[in-house]
Image (spheres, rainbow, N blue to C red):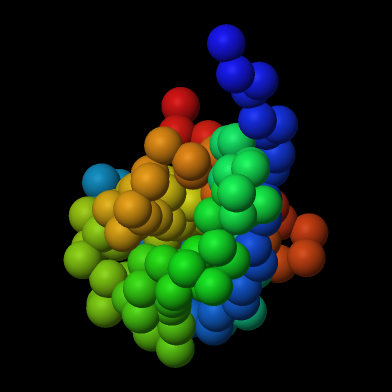
Length: 142
Ligand SMILES: Nc1nc2c(c(=O)[nH]1)N=C([C@H](O)[C@H](O)COP(=O)(O)OP(=O)(O)OP(=O)(O)O)CN2
Ligand SMILES: [Zn+2]
């Protein structure tokens, strides 16, 4: 039986800018105000989001790669930059018309987008989103 290739984690980081307002269509205006406070302000506010996408899998013994980083960059541009960079998340992204644009929901949205564009979606291990340098959410598809 042949030897199993070593497994590794591979991460690519990118940033995008977007504006949003925390507001849930499932809550009344008063509930939204009480729960989200300043982040519910009608004028919204912006973030320079940092996203880290991590893959986990075998290193191909012939290429020395799990996945070409250049390909991963293209996938992330398609899945993340295209729908969200310099956009109003609540108005421009269909997904956030029915749910609040929290970092939690953003992480799940990015996970789903990546699964859709990747040639080998089984490699996707984790998506991390930094809304600010202090507010970070990660998701592993659970
Ligand atoms: N569970 C969550 N809580 C909050 C979220 C979220 O996505 N998930 N988001 C926000 C706001 O969008 C807000 O922009 C962040 O607010 P805040 O923590 O007050 O951050 P600051 O702008 O003060 O910047 P820091 O550098 O993080 O202090 C609120 N809550
Ligand atoms: Zn915010």
